[in-house]
Image (cartoon, rainbow over all chains, first blue to last red; front, side, top):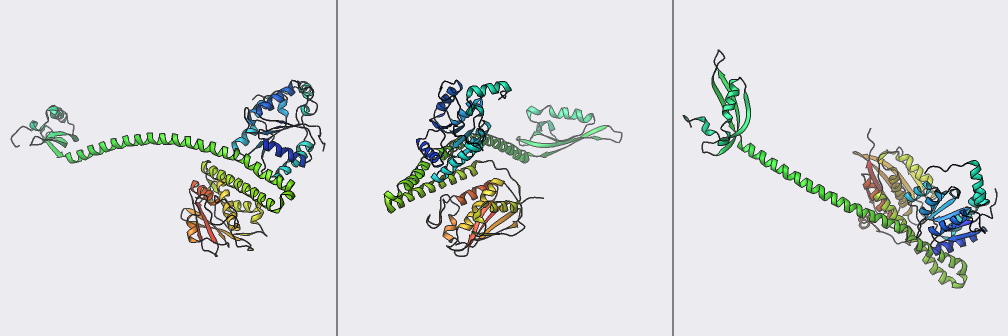
Length: 170
Length: 335
C-alpha cells in the first residue's frame, strides 16, 4: 500500500452545502491531500484543459481523483464524462460520480462513459464521514493512480507515445 | 297470375336475366340458388332465391323448364341491416382507434412529465433535505452543550423529520418505479427468493425475528424484482407491527387457488381493526402514529401496484390482537 498524499482531488459540485459538508467529511477522515473545488461542469472542463496545456504552471499534474456531481448548471457531470472520454490522456483519470439518487439509467450511462464508481450522496454526517474514510483508504491509498496524476501531463504524454496506446474508436 | 307471361314478374332492369338463364339451361347447366329480385304480383319488388332446371324427355330432349322461386326478402333485409351495422361498427372502431391514439399520446406526455417530476423529486428535493439533516447534526455535534438539552431535543426533531421526509421520497420513487417499469413475467422459485431475502436482512433473522417457511412453497409466474420488493415489504410489515417486547413470529406458506398461487405471510402481530383494513392499501394511509410504528404508508401501496402489474392480487385477513395474515396471489407456473 502506497500513500498518495500529494494526489490532488478535484471536486465538481455546484451545491454550496454539499461542498461545505464534503470539506468537513474530508477533515474528519483526515484527508490531507490538496482539494480543488470547481462549481460546475464547464469549470471542471476549463480546469482540466488548462492541465493539458500545462498553462497552470503551478499544477502541471492532473488530479488523482475526480469527484463529479451529475446535476450541475452549464455543463452537467455527464457532459464532463463525455468530454473526458474523448481526451487521449485525461481519460485515465479515476472518476467517482456523486448523485442525489441512483437513477438506473444515469448509473449505466455514467459507467459507459468511463466512470469508475457511482455513489449516492449520503444524507447523514456519519455516512458521509464513512464514505470519506473509504475514499481515503481505497482511492488515495490502495488504488494506483495513472501517470498523469503523479508525474504530470507531459510525462504521461511521453509514456503514451512510446507505448503507442491507441485511442479506442468511440 | 295464371295464364299471364312470367316475364311480367321481372323488374324492368332485369328483363334480360331470364333469357340468359334459359340459354344456359338449354346448354345443360343447372342454375341453383341464384339470388336476385323479382316483382310480386302486387308489383312490389322482392328478393328471391331461384333454382332452375330443364325438364327432359326420356330421349334427353328439353321439353320444359322447372323453376322454383323462394321469397327471401326478410332474410335479405336482415342481411342488409347487418351489413349496415357492420359498416357503422367499422366506423366506430376507427373513431375509437383515433381516440385511443390521441389518448396514448396524451398519456405518454403525462408519463414523460411524471418521469421528469420523479427525477427532480429525487435530485432537487433531496439536496436541501440533505443539508437540513447534516447541518442540524453538525450543530448538535459542535454546539450541543451551548444550546442545552431543550435546544438539542428540538434539533433532534429536525433531524428525524428530515429523515422521515427522505424515507417518503424514497418510497414515492419506489412506487413510481413499480408503476412505470417494464414487467416481464417468468417462473420464480418463491422458496429460494424468500430464503435470499431473509439472508439479506438481519431484521428477518433470529434473535430479531423467527420466520418459518412451510416447505415446499409453490413457484409462481411474476417479475422477480417486483416480487422481491413485495415480499420484502410484506415481511417488513410482519416483523414490525408487533406489541412491544414480543418477538415477531412469521409463517410463510403457499396454497393453490385455481390458476393462481396464494402466498400467505402470517404474523403474530397486533392485528388490524376491520375499519382500518379498508384503507390499508391506499396511498399515504397509516393506521398507527409515527411514534408507535415508523413508516410512510406507501409500502402496501407498492405491493398492491406490483401485484396488479404482475396480474395478481393482494389482501389481508386480520383481527385485532390475533395477528395478520396478508396474502399475495399470482399466476401459477403451468406445466
